[in-house]
Length: 122
Length: 122
DNA sequence: CAGTATCCGAAACGATACTG
DNA sequence: CAGTATCGTTTCGGATACTG
Image 1 (cartoon, rainbow over the protein chains, first blue to last red):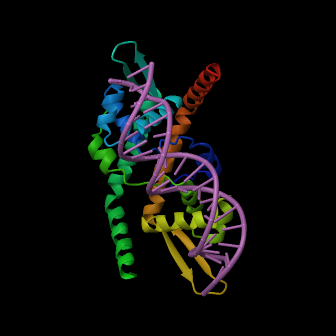
Image 2 (cartoon, rainbow over the protein chains, first blue to last red):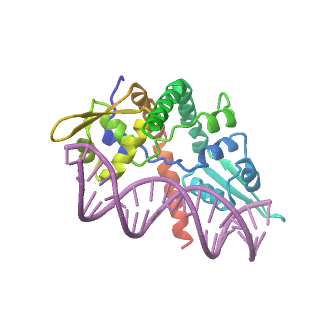
Image 3 (cartoon, rainbow over the protein chains, first blue to last red):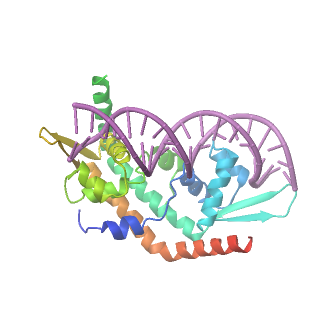
C-alpha cells in the first residue's frame, strides 16, 4: 500500500475536480486532436442532446478546461479547444484506463459473483 | 501528449468504474486501515445518512470493492473491509490527488477568471 | 447496532421545438 | 450553425422515523 494519504488533506480538500458528468470524458477525448465545432461534438458524442452538451461545455469552460471561440461569420461558427489544463486531464483518463485494464478480470469476476447471488436469492 | 488513446477502446469500454458517488472516496479512505463497522463509518463520514451509506456500501460490495461480514451477536455487529480490488482503488485516488496538487494553482486561477467575468457581466 | 421505509427536494439527463 | 426554452423523467442525496 506504500505511503498513506491523509483523508482530510487529500480526499476532502484535494479532489475538487468533478469531471463526473456523463459526457465529460468523451469531450476531452474528442478535443485531443484539436479544436472542434459544437456540431462536430454533437454528432461525435451521440446520443448527447444539444442542451446537455452546451451545459457540459459551459462548465468545462468555467473550470478552465476548454476555450470557446466564436467567429463572426454567417452561418455562425464556434470552436471549442482544450486548454493546457484541459489537456492535462488526459493523465487522469490514462490512470483510470490503466487501472481498469489491470483489474478488468477481477471486476468481471466480482460482478459475476454478485449476479449469481442475486439470482439464487430470487 | 505522448501516446494516444482510442476513444472507443478506452473511454467507452475501459472506464466502467464509477466510484462517482459522493462518499465513495471517503469510504475507501476510511477502510484503508482495516475493517470498520457500519456505525463507525456513519460517524466518520459525517454528515452522511444511514440510507445513503448503506446504498454506497451495497454498491461497492456488488462491485467487489468491499466485503460485508455479519457477526451473530447481540447487539448486531457488521464489519466492512476492503478487498484486494478495493485497496487497488487507492491508485486512482492517488492519481487524482497528484493531478490536483500539480494543477491546483491553474484551477484556482481559472475559477477566479471565470468569477471575474461573471461579475462584470452582472 | 445496523440497517430499512417513506417522503422530499435538487440535480442530471433527455426529447422536442424554437430562435438569432 | 449554435445554441436556448420548455417540459418530463430519472437518479441522487437528505431528513426523519421505524424495526429486527
